[in-house]
Amino acid sequence: MTEQEHVPHEHVRVAVIGSGFGGLGAAVRLRKEGVTDFVVLERADSVGGTWRDNSYPGCACDVPSHLYSFSFAPNPDWPRAFSGQEHIRAYLEHVTDVFGLRPHLRFGAEVHRTRWDGERLRWEVETSCGTLTADVVVSATGPLSDPKIPAVPGIKDFPGEIFHSARWNHDYDLRGKRVAVVGTGASAIQIVPAVQPDVARLTLFQRTPPWVLPRADRTISGAERRLHRRLPFTTRLRRGALWGIRELQVQAFTKHPGQLGLIERFARRNMAKSVKDPALRAKLTPDYRIGCKRILLSNTYYPALVCPNVEVVASGLSEVRGSTLVAADGTTAEADAIVFGTGFHVTDLPIANRVVGADGRTLAESWKDGMRSLRGATASGFPNWMTIIGPNTGLGNSSMILMIESQLNYLGDYLRKLDALGGRVALDPRADAVDAWNSKVQERMKRTVWNTGGCDSWYLDANGRNTTVWPGTTSEFRAATRRVDLGEYEVLRAPRPTAHPLTGTGATGATGATGVPAPGTAGTEVEA
Image (cartoon, rainbow, N blue to C red; front, side):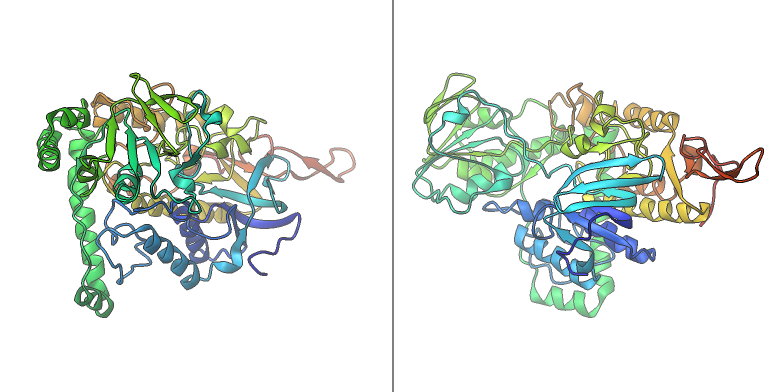
């Protein structure tokens, strides 16, 4: 079967949504577990996820290359310590080929609806290419996939060009234009220095200044790469060292935020080296503890801001009047183009509106008071549904690939548990288990810099609850997701024929479909 073929109403063991790091990692894990009856549904025309979508000038990763890659697919040929978007995307294409994933890919297959069928214990998945059914659905859409553009009054009447950093319009030439960049997150601090030399005027609308540290980037020499190719263990050693350093840093973020003061002083000195104007330094100095928002890395951001064609407006964009942009503090600027670096729908994942669970509610409705899951993976009322990079799995200082691989371990054991239970079976997280897990996570969150640092970040949902970040080390998360504890799940079994009390002929029983565990299975640890 080719990548583009689709047979209506086919059935697969597993349907994976998304082909970024999470989706491709899930596909590799499925093949390792001996599961070949699966598809990877991708709405775009190629793999890559956020590293396909984000192709803006200067786009690069702020995690070292050897740590921002799969442990099972080391790359000895990373060209730089911190790789650019094009190299990471090429790496994901390479992983796709090396592990033989292309026959499983369905491009142009956007998922419109997934609905749980409690009678048949399977998911019905409606896509733009047709409908299929699956025993298990793995959602790997990721939290950085759907751009968020604020509803600024008058924006629809802006006569110039508008686009989000994750939907860069490469057909529009910014050279010689008056460009407004809205936002000061990880994307904006890369875009500003990349486009500043070519534009006539750049106005940066800064609602909140970020803390910025130098980026220790460099070219990885040919000798280093040859060493990694000839002696693969050196690549593992390099990755291990990068991981260990970040594990040691976690305590400052999660238990002792006061220890971050030293890093804060270093960040101030870093700013002072490039920004000599006291007034501009005042605009760029955050009033919250470093680490409360993601610490950004750049050697070129501050130097770009002091250039004569750049103006920093220390206020958010509040209104658009024709080609005139008005900040909340009344500052105005003329613009030919607006680039929004305003982030993504993270705590209100769009995919949640498309997942309908056992009680007929969508996942978004179930999460109306905030995202909640069991071990960042499964949600009560949504049997055999798993998410990669789910609630409270984000990191503030290390590589998300570490968290993804932990969740792949959980996925692997989940499938082994289903096989061990036998027959048509599903696992539904118990509500009390979900409550217990989230209570523990939120209790630990109280001491973290993300909750105590005095900022309003995208880690927090509309209720001010941190449903995004993991309040511990990656080692702790790896241990917590190594095995599936059946005591945290209800075991659902498909209806099966039962003898009629008078005639002895078969009749359909619905014990499993109603959510009642099969006898002797609920709460029992089954080793695969």
